[in-house]
Amino acid sequence: GNSVTQMEGPVTLSEEAFLTINCTYTATGYPSLFWYVQYPGEGLQLLLKATKADDKGSNKGFEATYRKETTSFHLEKGSVQVSDSAVYFCALSDRDYKLSFGAGTTVTVRA
Amino acid sequence: DADVTQTPRNRITKTGKRIMLECSQTKGHDRMYWYRQDPGLGLRLIYYSFDVKDINKGEISDGYSVSRQAQAKFSLSLESAIPNQTALYFCATRAGINTDTQYFGPGTRLTVL
Image (cartoon, rainbow over all chains, first blue to last red):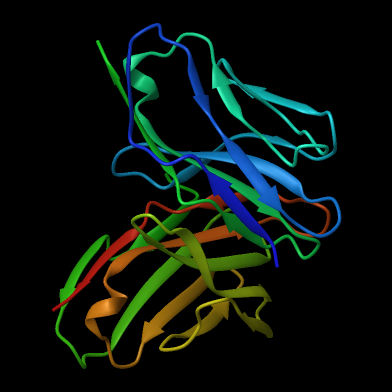
């Protein structure tokens, strides 16, 4: 079956530091890949997505590239802010559009 | 106003009680989903519905039931709550064929004592 593995947290960074959250997946076929973000006390919001190999998703300074050869979709941001503190989820969508999520990575950015 | 709303936002109940969590959406989407979130496990799919007459089990449906009362409403019930159903529950919607983005409600925090 489909599965998503993402790096365990929590991750604590200083403002303006570089952030990477690793995500790898196992799936049949060619799934779409997503990063969702959950701010404290809120539901999940779509951060970015990529639908085919070599696509790069980007939003709010975050980027992730769909790497079919390494089955990865790592999230990166060059300079984080305190407002980026949240839980980040990697996910994939199967042919029936059902989402499979990773465990989530808690990121805390200190001023 | 939020596009996907959930009620209640917080609920504490006792073992054996029947509980209903409600989800409403104004997005006009056909597809609706119920997930539970547990620390270290991410979100897991409980049930999903493609329209009022189409209900499907997800990966962890045991102990839960759902009702799709209308296109805009999708309720999750715990017939006899147990402590390991303590979790954060999310409702989500999706527009339809060939669109893969889901939109989430704010969540319901359920505690079963």
